[in-house]
Image (cartoon, rainbow, N blue to C red; front, side, top):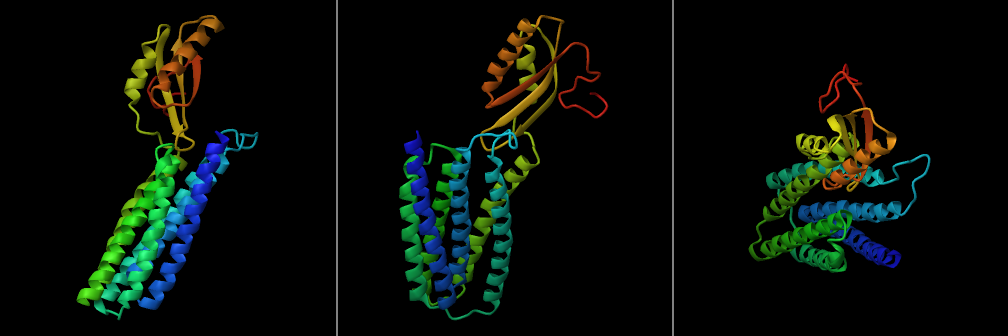
Length: 296
């Protein structure tokens, strides 16, 4: 298992090196050729390079043991990186759209062959990165996310290569800012979902679950009179924490423990990884699924 993890980390490190190299090449190439599309693609690659760094860091952090300071572990570090990375990408994409609009109004000369050469370098590097992670893409959401980022980079590079060819053949300057806008819009579309999900995790929003169904499942267990006051949140991409109050008759601890164990087994089917059940008997005034301030 350790050796397999080392292989994945090694391949991600190579992909990080390739992507940062592509980013630097596209920034230099974009400035020298005058292509805003290359600059847009460099920002895309930079963002995904940071995503790869976060993926690598997430694997390293996941290997650390929990301690008294971080009793749930360190898995939220990846969420913090995702939030900052996606927020920065959205802001930069808006600036690129503004710059592209200015290029539509005032076109600048573009060195088509240089733009094409740099774009082909980027396409080659992204394709190699895809090959490195392709066989591991289904092993975890973390690696799959990195793989999808690289796939989007490759598609973006294809768009820039196509734009460069059209520019060389037809000498139409508006193609370059058009490609830039398309890339920026795609980054916004991709980055918004990541930003939204990271905010939900940081705000401890509940994952998409049917609470009514879960309530029925718990209350179907023999000895359970009522289940209420649900709290569900995520620590990381795979860790879902669940706690609730369960009303039962007065009974021995051994019998109560059996009920707790059965609830835990039932909830595993919903992807819940950690369950805390508070057993009680005629304690709570309110028995709603969500606890109100005056019902505890």
